[in-house]
Image (tube, rainbow, N blue to C red):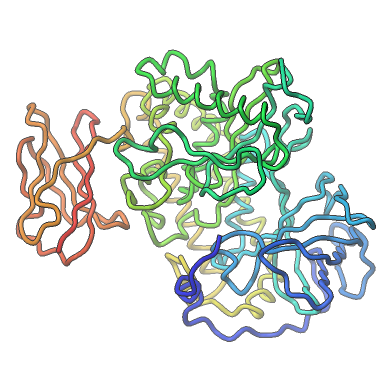
Length: 537
């Protein structure tokens, strides 16, 4: 996905000139990439060479050492969307044999595979949010990609600390579902496994089906759409019978979930434990992109249960308090509330999650699982121990990284906090997580008996006149209920709020709001929710 020049300028506005670093050795593995003088493009992959220097635990690695972990051909291209516009670029790498074909090989102790990602932490000045999210997820989900830190030299230029990460693949050591061969077009073999995702749509020329939209709006009255993509098999590889099967199956699943009696049936369709754990990872980190982008799920073969499981997680670089929009820096509130906090975003959370959240039995599972995790795998000792471990691991290398990219004390989109050094950035992360845990520990036990948040499916609120030049009114159901009426900006900040009965209510009396677009939210004390956007001229 291409960003505009204006967006790119925003990301990099005011940043210092980049420095060169005299790099000779590291206590991390060293990745040496050579593209023979050719600049790495967005796509397609170009030929290159990768040498990995890793002399083992506790051993120092020198740039002059032999390529001990990998020494061979690769294809390489840029990866990501907005992240491509940082000067520190992320890469997708494909290991290749002498004939240019895919080559499966283990890298830095991770199971063999041909496709890998080199993530380039830049706006995240702790360099660890993605790594932390995967570490936390590995403690609860069936699998989350393994990560290894390294320092990278590209065409002789030291470019800093990177994270080598497994990509989402189907195999026994990753997403462990049955292999789907091209001739699996009938019977039990046709039923799985499949890996799909919800993400921004994009055309898939030459594919059997490519991306396709849900038949259901992501929220009542929403102008946005939810799009699904094939991940395994790839769009260009999936057979027509397989494409028809999984689309029809997903459609039938959505029909069930949209029906009034869905609560009696959804457990027959989904692996509930994975959905609960996926939700808790998103909420622990309050991932701004959570549930709606890079949202992977997979279907098992019927002989293995046939259910839809959520995960693996992907893309947590705007989480754990880093983002300065859509409620990102606020340690309170649910990530699931994105649709009410940022209703104008082009990609909002699909109705699946509102339906499940509204089921008391599902909320009971969340509360029970949270208590279990907090007593063990997600104890304070475990969660903060991971931060300390990564911080210690990067102690030497991060100094070189920020010598190469001197961005402390400067805004890099979307920084909610701007530290003057590495220690301040890590301290902000620790403090934010401590506060987040306190809020979740207080809220989650209430879930079995109440929504504890405005995630119920919203109805349209009648607001007039709209656009408004002076006074505006909200028309609430006059049924004896008490309603809290709020006006918020598109970043989710509450500008005015008032509780009262239904009927006609004047919005923000005595408050002079500048021209702009605002969100009006009416929340009844019984959990009903109504929303509208209002334009102030």
